[in-house]
Length: 154
View 1 (tube, rainbow, N blue to C red):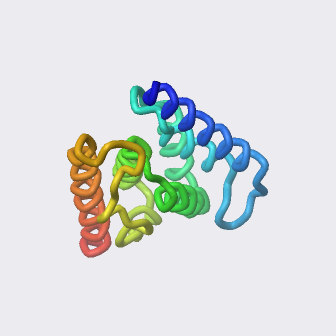
View 2: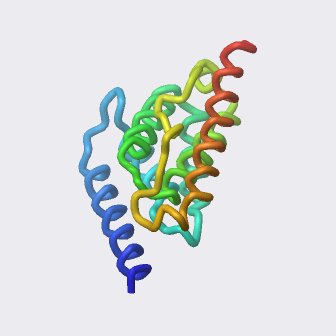
């Protein structure tokens, strides 16, 4: 029963985030289409990845520096609030993919705008989740270093 409750709770969180993002106005830091795609690509569902949403994110940030800024804001906002290993891992994967986009804005990011170096899943038994937590922290450290090195090699 606990697993079902966790999945329902995650789906509800994602739905609320999608609703809030769809009602947001477009500003210098916010772009509803980017936010919606980030939320869908980093869903709480630990059984699947929404590749279509990730492709939308990559297409948008490759075409516009404004969308890249909105992507950074949306992803940072989501990563700072999450206690779910699935969301954190998908967020780091999404950021890693974004670093591969051919855009000057991407190459000049430097260090990542969020910090998962002390990430810990807050939804499960710590003894069962330590491997996920360690993997998220190690992968975050790799992507953060890669991002910083991209700036140095310009």
